[in-house]
Length: 183
Image 1 (cartoon, rainbow, N blue to C red):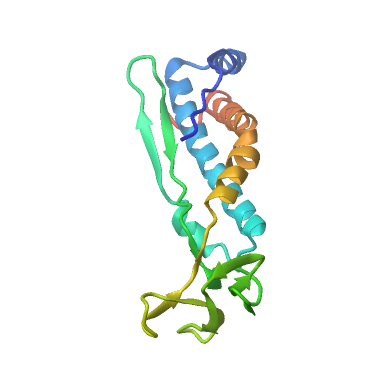
Image 2: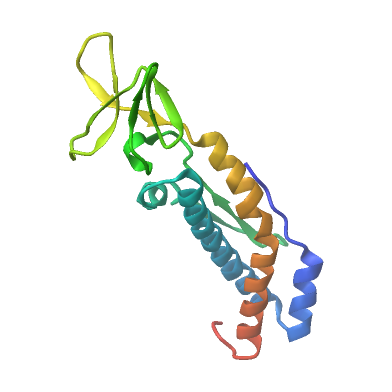
């Protein structure tokens, strides 16, 4: 799990610049945190779709859904937990055409040993695998994305979380003090 701490002195400096009260700071922090989490989720979904070579982002949308916001108590302003489901994806979720290879099948530069090319229930060509030792049942092969996705999320998505948070925090403080938006 990744943990991020935002510079409290920078938040205080921005708040003092606009003359914000403690309540306005707490509300702006909460809203900026939610917006930052939403922005990171969107960046991760778009970037992972492109990086992994997926047909659509719908597979990832289901896996980037979990956000848990913690309200702070005392001097703590709270935090957010983000969950990314990085378990294997169906082979048909990837762009490309499945091809039979001597050891199995491959698709989108990923090989599946013991796999074979067949049509799934929707009639799309994909990579299938036998579930047991017999001819049937068969199931669609699943391709591993965990290492590549985790590396992308850590290195490229969360690399700019500070800039995004402080941009959102500044906008929220400004709106709450100058324009007297929300409480």
